[in-house]
Amino acid sequence: MQLAIVAAGFSAGEADRLRRAMAAWKRKGGLEPFQRRLIDGMRERGYPESFAHQIFNQILGFGEYGFPESHAASFALLVYTSAWLKRYEPAAFCAALINSQPMGFYAPSQLVRDARAHGVEVRPVAVAASDWDCTLERREDGSPALRLGLRLVRHLSREGANRLLAARAAGAFTHLADLAERAALDRRDLEALGASDALADLAGHRHRAVWQVSGVERALPLLPAQTAVPEGIPMLRAPREGEDIVADYRSLGLSLRRHPLALLRGKLNARGVIPTLELWERPNGQVVTTAGLVITRQRPGSAGGVTFVTLEDEVSHVNLIVWERVASAQRAALLESRLLEVRGKLQREGDVLHVIAQRLTNLSALLGDLVVESRDFH
Image 1 (cartoon, rainbow, N blue to C red):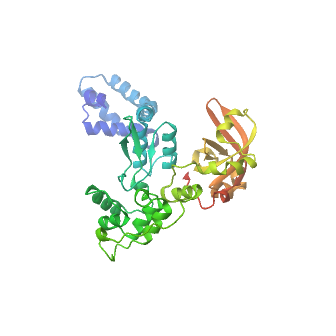
Image 2: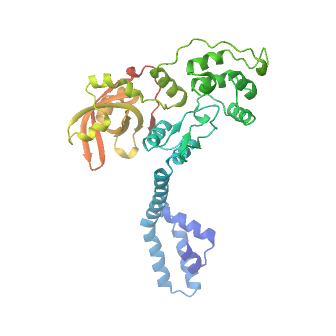
Image 3: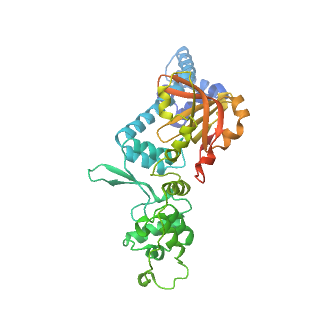
């Protein structure tokens, strides 16, 4: 661009059009209109015509590699910046990615899991502390902790969240009715907060929160919140761990409790399922059986019908290669499974490990009501 401006008298706009034409000249033939303009402009400025033709041919040649190279350099800069942030500011990096959802390859559950694996303390959604976006809070040692934001609570309206934050800025909530009255929350918003366990500080465990929400009617209050008659706390048992995990995934799409497969490991062991991390200990080419939550499915148009699947268990993850004939023969298991068991051959090259799928089995029934949504790309 600078060469065209200085040597041929191109304006900045003309030089930018030349740049765009260079990127697409093979496909659209867009460089020809610039050839005469470039050569005439250089001749007017005293350059020999042969030299001008030489420059134009160099531009043609640059178009064959220069733009892929520049795009690669731009992408490399983004990768370097992201890698630096992930290494030195993992809490901020994770918060930014979640706040930018929906985007990218991984869902918030995988982002949070990776952050925790790298030493980030992740704090739950709470009406007393969470903003709409995920934020950073200072730990006692001065390092940042990640506070999950209200944006993760399914079925919570943005308007309701804004009113909640405005009411909290005026003073801490003392009980659930106080929250409902001051934030003018309707039943849908209150139920969403109760289901997500965001009311734990006000109501105790999830079952109590749901019970108390059912007794709050903002539209027709019998008494103002500040004079509400206190009620006895019902003798409701706390949710079992599995119930909490199921509810977390249903309302937030993730859980800070144990991974669902940690609760199923005994049953999976009985089926001969190998944890994903242990696959690295097996020799290349061995036939193995493993299983995990389906977190991504990909079938790129350039992959010749191959489907790539990523499974996640409580320790790690593994990538599957499903050839077209296997995908066609076992289509239901491939597309419908939330929990997928695969038997196949290990393929390992350096730091890359895959399982070439031979048999797929849908084990989703073991998850019960657990909702796990994979990200599917075509």
